[in-house]
Every structure is written in C-alpha cells, then in structure tokens.
Figure 1 (cartoon, rainbow, N blue to C red):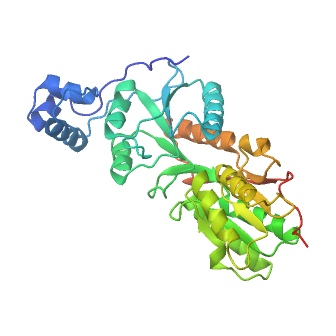
Figure 2 (figure 1 turned 135 degrees about the horizontal axis):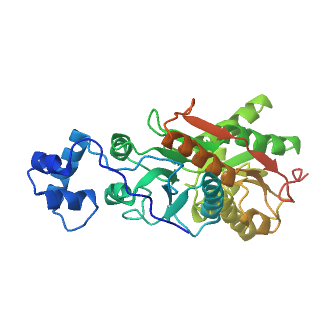
Length: 347
C-alpha cells in the first residue's frame, strides 16, 4: 500500500521571500510550489526561477526512524514485460528498506521518453525522497532541476548517456555482445550479422562493439553491410532482416540486440521460408518471457533486469541518507541462455 510521506519543513527562504523576489502574491507562489495548473506560464517561469535562485527546497529528508519515506519509480510504460521485471525488483528492495513506492508512467508529451517539467515540480509536493528513472530520457535542464532541488535519483539502463555525476545502473552490454557472437562462432558461423538498436544509444553501441571485438579476436574481418540498425522496433527489425537476406552473401546467423526485435526477425525468416536454426541461427538480448514462448525458444543474453532495479533502489537509499556511491556507474553481469534457436551453419 502506498502511503503519503510525512510533511517536511521548508528549507532556506520562506515562501513570502520567494513571492517578493518573483513579483507575485504568496498564494500564487504557493500554487507553483504545489504543482497547481491554474498559473500562467510566464508567472510559473518567474516563480520557478526565483525558487531555483533562492534555493527554496521543500523536500522531507529521509529518516528511517520515521514513517516510511516515499520514492518514485518512473517507467516508460507499464504494459511491457521489461517494466514488470523492473517493478518487481524495485518493489522488493523498497519493501526491504521500509519505503513506499509510487509508480508513474505516461508522463511524457508526444510519445517521447522525457518526463514533463510539471511532473518534476510535483515531486516536492508528494514529498518524494528520491526517484528511480527507467528508460527515461531526461534533458540537461531536468537533470539540473533535480540537482538544484537536492532530490537524489538513479537511472536504470538510461537511454542516453547520463551527465557527469549522475548515478546509473545497467548491464554489461559489451560483454553480452561478445558472449552472443562467441557462441555463434563456436558453432562454426563466420557470416554473422547484427540487428542493432539506435545508433546513439549507449547500450546498443556497446553490444555492437562487443560483437565486433569477438569477430576480431576470431580473426574475422568486420563487414559493415552486416550491421543494421532497427531502433529496438520489431517491425523495423523485420525489414532489416529482409535487407540482410538479400545481400550477395547473406548471413547464416543473426545477433539481435533485443528480444523484442528478435520477434520481427523470426517473422522475416518465416516469410522467406527459412527455418530456425536449420537455415539461420538467431541470438537475442534481454531474456524476457517472450524469448521462451517463441518457436523455437530463443537463445539470448540475459540481462538481470529485476536485480538492476533492486540495485538502483539500494543505491538510492544510500544517497537519500547522505552517502554518495564510489562509482556513478554500476554494471551487472550478463549471461548467455542457450535454447534451440542456434545450431551449426547449413552445409
């Protein structure tokens, strides 16, 4: 059950001082602080700038001896198995720490991954002692807002490279790319292609770098035409697979940088009348429940998603208590899970 955190005291200047600085009434300043929507944008901007300039902070400090503190978990969506695993890990760790957890989704404008500023303003109203962001894209100004308001936060598998000093938890993506490719090499494949995510996404770039490193270690030249980006989208992965199969020397194996994209790869191979793994082997990445439901079950690289979320929450608790992690980046190991979507190449 989610409970409201105990009310805290206002740090720094009073609300009257903030109102005078912004040239508004105290009730108007109070509306901005409390996240009310009935404030003109220009007025909100002046009050927000005054809050930042004067260092006004309304956030209760974490105190384990008091009623359970409130922490926020912001996920990109709630209807995915990935988010379900994140929620399980975070909820378990929050329960162990005696914290209440608020889960938020659909906090973005226009379908993007960036939480709206209005929601960030409401963090102080809820009395949130800290925030976990999963797959969220924060702007530099949003990072700065959290820092200025002294709200500790941890990024779980950040989509973009976090700014210096931001704490994040992720998986050993480079090693996962190496493991997937080495598995295919051990089976005898030499024509191995990769269906990658976004070009600018650190996790996707690391997986492709691991793939290339494994090829180099095996004495195989990297073939640029074997690298196709599909933005973690199953439909686009399907199209990229058709492109690979139309090459003069099509690959005999595909390393796909997410299980979701692997579903699109399976569709493309079926449309070509190709059998997995008899004609083409496929390795995924994530080990989501879907990877066990495919036919044949998908060989994949397991990301410890629930463990990543639990680790992130434990780090957040330390930060809420005034402790700073020694490293801003924590990586958990990945593991290759062998199923029946891989086999030696056709003779």
